[in-house]
Amino acid sequence: MANYLDELSVLVIEDNQGDYVLIEDYLLEKFEHIKIFHCIDFASTAEFIQNNKGKLSLILLDFILPDKEGMALVNEILSFDLKIPVIMLTGYTDLGMAKNSLQVGISDYLIKDEINPTILHKTILFALNRNSFINQIEKEKNNYENLFNFSPQPTWLIDGQTLKILHANIAAQKKYGISLNNFLNMLFTALHPKEEEEWIKEKLILKQETVQEKHFTHYLFNQQEIKVNLYFKEININSKNDIIIQSNDISETLNHINTIEIQNSKLKNIAWTQSHVVRAPLARILGIINLIEEKVISDEELPFFLTQLKVSSNELDETIKSIVEQAKQLKL
Image (cartoon, rainbow, N blue to C red; front, side, top):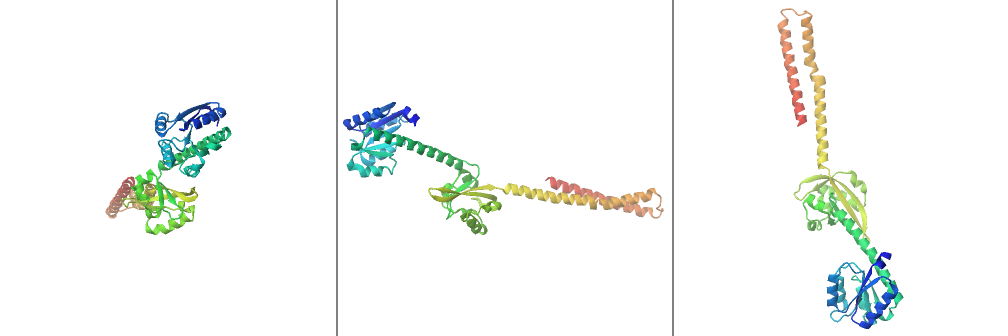
């Protein structure tokens, strides 16, 4: 609050000079450091605001000016979107309209005949304090909206009961090739194949977060299928329970795992070939060589064993070629 009072600048929009002088006296009595500006009609007010945006802390606005009055005046002042409190100054005859102005963004109203230094002081402090909280909430809201919109993961806000899509972030629009307007006309279940719709609907409505343990299929705009993990959380917005959902495309990961499994299968085949198929012809070759070295083969038997040696060598060669080919396919 000290910051507000150190640099308080108030624009009083009042065409009655007597009322303005009274308000000015009250302000100077209650606030040590204050700048007071005065406009007497809407035209001069609009010009002043255009030239002093960002320099005002508060506006005190008479409900009736020579060139504009009532709700038309209120709407014009609020259209400047100054993010500062606007307090109406009104009479008893316009009390109903002053109350209605609270619904469109006016911070408070004061009845001129009831204003005194204390009431004006308390009303201004309350309006400044509340406006600070509102601006802070607005900033936090914008921060969360930015986190939602610019998250790299496709993210949706959906109705917690109907599962109608209420919002889709930029990543979802790009990834799925679906515009925001088209998303807003869809149920979230429409992204799933028919066989998954009822299951995902039940999990989301009942808030069963085990949905995260299962892989799902999503359709992109071009009907391409992708495999996704889904993560969701129930959130409360305007006393209404909605669901925020985030998807993670795991198609490439699953393909990678499948590739690894195929490679492991090929490695097992190569290992089995090396341990079984290669050993048979190799054992025959070594046996024949051993018989020749020990000279237990007669001259008549020699051609037969030489033939068997050749057959086994060819068999071993073909087996090695097969292993090499399998290794090449594994690399591919």
